[in-house]
Image (cartoon, rainbow, N blue to C red; front, side):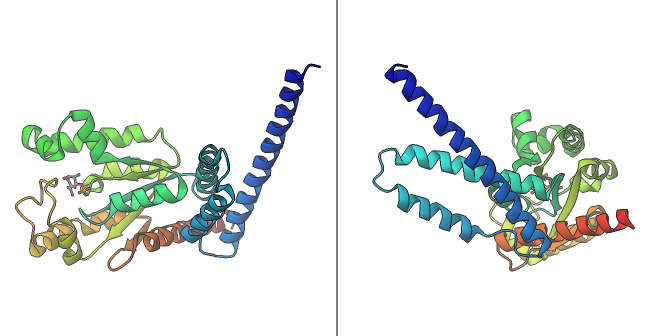
Length: 268
Ligand code: S3P
């Protein structure tokens, strides 16, 4: 065997060791999530992720390939989150709620914590139509927009383990709710009209609110929609005065409770 062959053999041994380590690591990740779940422990611990990253950064300091190794570890961390998400939710998480209830913020946060793909319905519709939601309403009318929403929801049934952030009016159609529930659990985010007003007052991409940015209008429209929102929801999360990590943790815990209840009913 010449020197080059010998180096290649040693490299192959290294790869095998990495592979074994990764498989062992993934089992440990699975073990951690199962343990947290069965002991009703907090699932989301952003501090832990930061601690791990800092520890590695310390070890890698002044190493020759620090950046390259750090990239690999970021990829490992990302995939650990995916493993956890797949274990926790084998379905889509569908976020509904009034405009400004926090659907996009929470969907980004969940995606960050569990490396789940997010589907922002308004963004996809707007991209496909090549214009803003306000322009779609102005050019084609609301009914046209609502039909696009329904079509997109039907399409989304092909997806698994994603977070869907719906438009505020999406659950108003019963068939939309049926689509959401086919492969997903529906999470209703609520907030008081005052909180909503503060969150939307400076934005201009919501045609229904454009000339109605005031608490009485928001309150009335919210009340008109409330029954349909509540009927669609598998779980309801109040968001007033809470931080996004806290809200995500509450969603995870309530979804796990719901899954536990379903399992118990199925077993009985
Ligand atoms: C709407 C909410 C908007 C958008 C459209 C209509 C509604 O989405 O879909 O302007 O009827 O409540 P957000 O809830 O994301 O603002």
